[in-house]
Length: 536
Image (cartoon, rainbow, N blue to C red; front, side, top):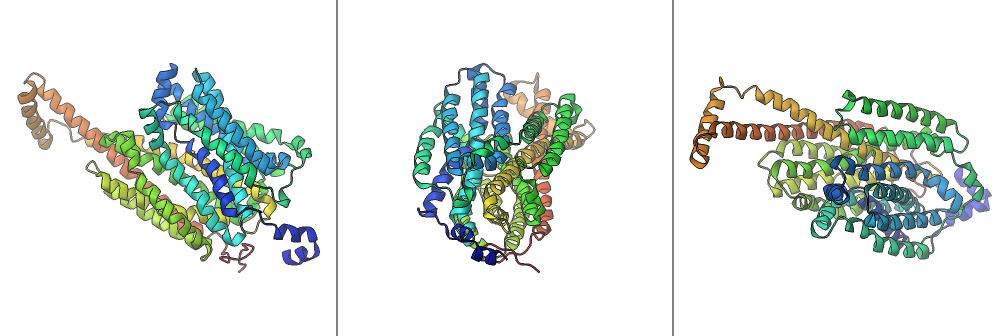
């Protein structure tokens, strides 16, 4: 049907034959550089928060809004890319996002107070929110469908490598220079990305702008999206601190999110010019891909936080050393991304995704088995390598499969929604896993405390042994109290370690459940010219 239509319509023939004038790999590298800069900023400020708080006279609690302000603004703009590109063109929108992101990065660096820093972070998040989906859409249209898997391997490297090195790079810059430089480093990258994009990137014929679309912005949908994402991010950010649903503050934001999110879905489904084209979810393949990407983004971000957090809190690693334990995984990603891209062109996407989740489950089972208070740097580095091994296969396959069976003019909307669910999945799973570590730590602590009683012979023997040590080194006055305090500290460490073990077992179970979910995708013809889906 599509072929006959193309034969009859010269315009469709011209669109099918369109190719960028520049080598698509040069275009891909250009837009990937800008996207890398943006993704890096979602995590680079994490370890600098205490320095920012001290420098600007803010509390640690107030400084976390530096992260939340960026995430909320970013999440709101992500699905708006399709509308913005329809108004001024995808290339101009991409350039505008680079300018906003770069200028606001400079303003963040010179911000003299926390309120101004938060304002500039909102601007930065708005600029960055358009970079990810537009970069992915530009890649999708610059390559033939048969080559998209390999092209998306470059984008996948950006999406998964940047969050991994962000905390390490941020910690090193903050320790050796100042927190201001975590923003200043974006400036030369932004300038270079702007000039390369201006020179190399062009809009395809099916992505021509129409100024009339300026007045077709879905203001109701935008308002509901702002309320929903703001309520979600604030609830997730403050949930653990406020005791989750034990707090009226969190309950209020949870209700606000639920009402606004349901209203958003109902409105967008019926809107004539929706902010987010939810009708894409009628295509079952796209709906399944969004679900799989939601969990993939969650797994990537959660484990990027969990492992270095364990190494610092329980084993006393510095931020730099904990970050270095992730570096081996980054090197593996560089090697595996192109291999995964080639695999997408040779095997059905659903088979590769299932394979990836099998490796995910094995990796998290191994993590739960090996994590203990005697964990060495070498072992932790190898665990990270195993954890990231399946990411390229799942990420690239899901991203590529999202475009199967959908028209090319929907590329902007597809990339916006896929990146939107990935970011939301990351935010949700980071909060849930951190909350699980806290809750399971308290559970194990209560269980272990049952053994710290005078009637327990082993406990009393340990107290006596440590008391003798402290009597020799510190005198006998407080030896017994010091001994009990030492045992209690060990108990806390063991409780927290068991909590991390539990969380990795939970992630293992979630990964196992995703294996059959991968086969909800229809089987595609690998390497087909149009990326079509096999019909059985």
